[in-house]
Length: 341
Image: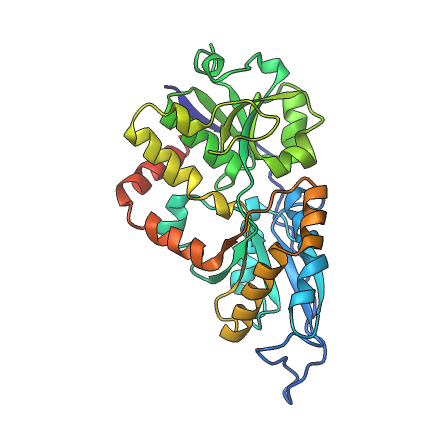
């Protein structure tokens, strides 16, 4: 098994500082602050840690169109993109600068299981829930000549995978799969977004990428790529490729895949609010999201955009985090797998 990670220089832009907007309009309490149990008269912000026009931004905009219907006062909802450092810029903003009135929420992407448990990266936040894990697929460009897992296994040179960098799914998933299944890989990190990785595949700069089905529909569907592997127990219509778990050779391989990829799947996209937000407002937001996920009009818009919706509640996500905490040995192995060379 050959594992190698390299860094791609000069492609990660400096963190773009966006001016914080004054978001709460005149409110109902004497102090001019909205009460904990209403959002009336206020403006709700969704901060997206990735580029405008990508799947995260589009998902947040579809949510923003419908979420206000299930919040008292039907507040206006705006979406702001705050790209940089694979979502870390937005995460830091939410943790240290955003108001804690419950009117600023964030759409985050997956952190690694090791960061989640050992570094407690979600400690400053309350999880609101997830619209559910989109299926994940590994795509190889035509130039690579690889069309099956066995061809990947026998590749003369480790295929080059493009990614934003840790801890995003395009970085985490291929490295874990390669370690679990004994596949050669070279990780080329530092791309700003999925569109840049697609251009790199088209130009032969990298050979492959691991993406969600959402990202496939928004970025890669027209590219000259072929799916080779999936991280989804359920079949994916139109993608007749094996599920990684089905070809894992032993118990350790299955534990690596389950802990590092499958259990983490709801965190490919999930919403949070700063932990200091009023408890009553956190509860309102969680309830409103759960209602939005099953709203027929929201579902119609989401499916038209190519998004899959299979909601996971905040409570279910917290239960998963507790189970991850019971696997310290596997978490340590995952940490080692994801370390730069």
